[in-house]
Each structure stands twice: as C-alpha cells, then as structure tokens.
Image 1 (tube, rainbow, N blue to C red):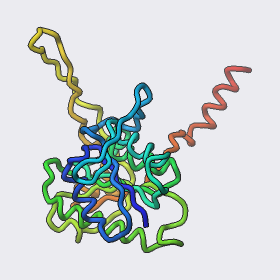
Image 2 (tube, rainbow, N blue to C red):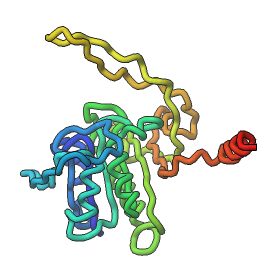
Image 3 (cartoon, helix red, strand yellow):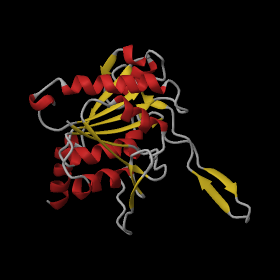
Length: 254
C-alpha cells in the first residue's frame, strides 16, 4: 500500500503530523504539503508562476502552493509511483455543507479523486486541535475499515469521502454515520476596518449558521455527537432541471 498524505494547514500543522503517525504501518507514506496555511483555497492551481519544492526537517515534501498543487504535482511527476490512496488533513476545523466548496482539505483529496485515486479528507469539528489524538485514532480506524473491502484491499473504483470528527476523547468509539451535505445560511456581512494608512480594508464575514441540518446531514450527525462520513462527487450538473431548461430553450427558439 502506497499512501499520499496532504493538507491545507501547512506542513508544520499538528493535524498533519497526527495523521501521518496514525497511518504508520499501513504501507509506504509520502507527505506532500503546502509551505503555508492555505485554508479556503478550494481547488485552486497555481498557473502564473513556477512551484518550488523542498524537503523539510520533519520529512515532508513542501510545495510553495495550494493543497491542490501539492497533490497534482505529486501525481504527475514528483512521486516515483502512483499512490493507492490519498489522505488529506487532519484539518483544524469542520468542513461540512457548503464549506466543502471552499475547503483546501477537501480539495486536496478531490485532486486525487480527479486522477482516479481513492481519497479521504479528515477534519476536526472545532478548532484549536482539541482531542487530536482521538481524531487520529478515528482516522486510522476508518482507513483500516476501507482497506478491508474490495480487490487489492480497496473497494472497487475510485471514490471520495469527507469525514468530520467531533473533538472528543472517545471519538474513535463514536457511531459513524453515512451522511449527505447540509446547507448553511448566507455568510455574515463583511467586516470593514481602516488600516494604519487610512485605507478601508475588508475581512470576509463569518460563515452562516446551519440551515439544512436534518438528521441525515453532516451538520445533524455532528450535532448528535457522531462521526460524519459523506461520500462526495464532482458532478455539479443540476440533473433534475435539465429537462425544464431544454423545454425553455426550445420554446424560446420556436
């Protein structure tokens, strides 16, 4: 088993080190991570400058780019062999509902998925790394469960899982529920400030509260003190509305 591990909090993040330790003994591990915190960068690729790569003292291969950059170059020439599994995290904070569209943690895993490699993104629900060891044990257990199925140790085909873990000492013993993504209310208003030069600057406002948080959603399951595992896909097509749009266009052209 060859595992590639990335993240979006940067190569020095405690969550990355915890995930690497948790996966020891599962196979060969390569760590390719951003030089700096790249939270909120989504699936961005750096196309306007070359990327630099160096080996850090903690053994990680460091890229001065985004989480997607890290996995992309790892899979397209940096690594000597293609990994069997891509893991991302453990992130410092939840990635649920609409957050997954902005998340660099999910994006790193998704980049593996786009290249046909199974991938899992792991996130701690609350920031500040509380009960990180328990979250790491949970991640290890989930990876082991995944490796038990299918030919060659992995389920058939490639897939993408988004895992959110409560900050609890017993996280590895909590029920695990397959969920769907919930939805948030719109973000809070932008925060205006004035910098020392007298210029107005803006901070993106806090995320909105959960709006669609039913028991089958990631929000609902986490609120109930369980681990949320959401299978993701990349297809953004609104399949239910394709027919309606076709009829509208046909009517407009008649």
